[in-house]
Image (cartoon, rainbow, N blue to C red; front, top):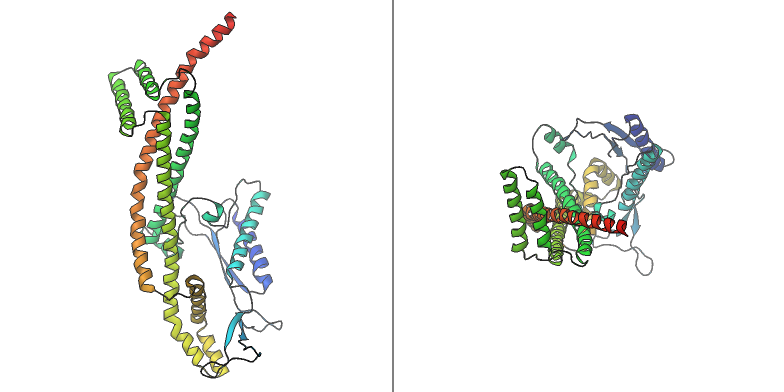
Length: 401
């Protein structure tokens, strides 16, 4: 769990201990808390955090270990227990606590965010954290993938990893997406303002404004090199407008809308593929765990005697927990469909390739937004210069009156 760089180490540790005590120990868990402050990662940003390892088996009032699950026997319409083909009573294993539930994990994440934000507020800091995903927050960003200690250690040693490369690419893409969205939004605001201005009587056309802007720049140029540069920029702006048949402000606005829609479609496709890649990674991991550990579970079911079963459960506790978790997750995700590891892996590889190919498509869109902003700057400047003598003439007329 990440600690906050805005807080001191002592404040972070106090916050973590209180959180573990209230959310885990007070509920009957035994918790092992470890603080970790590794060397700074790329960019020099500290990454202090703490690890919590808890028991998942409840304790009885006398201090002995309780049961993680209890049996709910299946009954027929007469209330009698149902036997399977081997003559054993059929039952469902029901957890005795809610510690494994996704809703409980969500509650813990929410409580940690609330505790941190309360501390920020106490210190008068204008920052907050949010336990929710980007989607639930309404943020149109691509989430990074969890790297883990091994990957971070390799990256710290200069060894570039697949996860590290993917996260670097995702962060760069998010920065680019935010930058382009900001520019597009500003352009729409500007267009609305200029459209209103151009709707006034005797307002010059878009081309006239560009010509006026570059004529003014040439008049103030001190060298042939500067005039040549102005001429080149003017030619590029005119060529851009001509090639895209942007003769009026309405044409320019339609073009910006088209670029914006294309950008959002590309971003949406990337988000969709990213979400599916994460889902497939989980399915592949849990599917492999299920198939690998199913023989262990089968061997447990074949044990006929209670002591034999308990001994086997104790010696294979970690494997069985992984198996039960995999079975539960696959049941929720697949909704009765079969495990298809081969198909999942093929789809995962294909999506990763498609995902990587989407990145270069951002570049031409960003370049066009930059070109639109250059046109914006020229038109804005020309309008301001045009308004100045009109304002002087208006004031002179008022004085004469």
